[in-house]
Image (cartoon, rainbow, N blue to C red; front, side, top):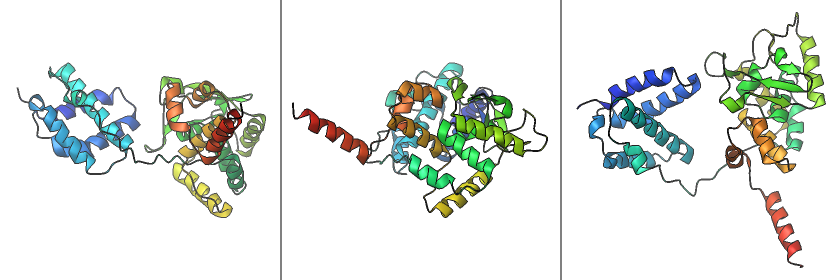
Amino acid sequence: MNLKFEEAFKSYKEYINIRLKAQSIRAIENRFKTNILPFWKDYNIYETTENDYIKWQCLIENKNYKNKYKQALHIAMVSFFNYCMKFYKLEKNIASIVGKFKDNENEEKKVDFYNIKEFKKFIKKVDNNVYKQFFNLMYFTGTRPGEAMALKFNDLSKYQISINKTIDERNKRKIGTPKTKKSKRKILIDKKLYKDLIKLKKEYQNTTDDYFIFGGSKPLAPTTINRHKIKACEKAKIRAITLHQFRHSHATLLINKKIIINEISDRLGHSNVNTTLNIYTHSDLRQQKRVVKTLNFLRFF
């Protein structure tokens, strides 16, 4: 039997196009185009071997990618060969047999965020109320940027917002469903944020409940949001963090206030608690000092 890898991938694309979200499809296509097809495209899928996979892994290792991206490439290959086993009677999944890339243990995991003092310094310099409340909501609820952009006034009830859609930031602000089933959720909000959002509604002309909270008749553009963010950071003389790192900031804020991890995970819309633990918990000098202080106390007994 003979089937070129590239031909099988064309069929695989049709398969995922009706099963995955646009953002996931783009990511997969980019991984194949950049780092998979250049090596594999002319291979006969029925003649690929574990040794071929190891050669490809060595090629990828030489590019010094981050651990997370390397594992994303591996997962893409595992999924592709599983598809081939199901629909083309491929006998084995060489990617699963060989296993994932080895993590670079020296890679520094850097997750930046604002503590509450830094955020207050930043938010004071946001001079447009629509953008000010956007950043307030991001920081004090931990929504994903696309979830915040997609919010409408009919998603706002007393002291609560309903996350039931998201905006694809890279696809002309197209509205879609949340990232996962767990992402569809209701988030309780503080009284001040609720009052500020109600006041914001009055700033728009001819407002209806179908208006976007941030933008009115149409949602804010990510580029404009970032422009206001950078401007405020420059005025506040503080480093700029990404929109997604406002989500990191919220999780870190709650963790430092000793909110239980299960509650934080539900609030963020994570599929499981381990995701929250792996991404949003950080070790810093203050936490280390707290550990030593506890140990010093215990040594007296």
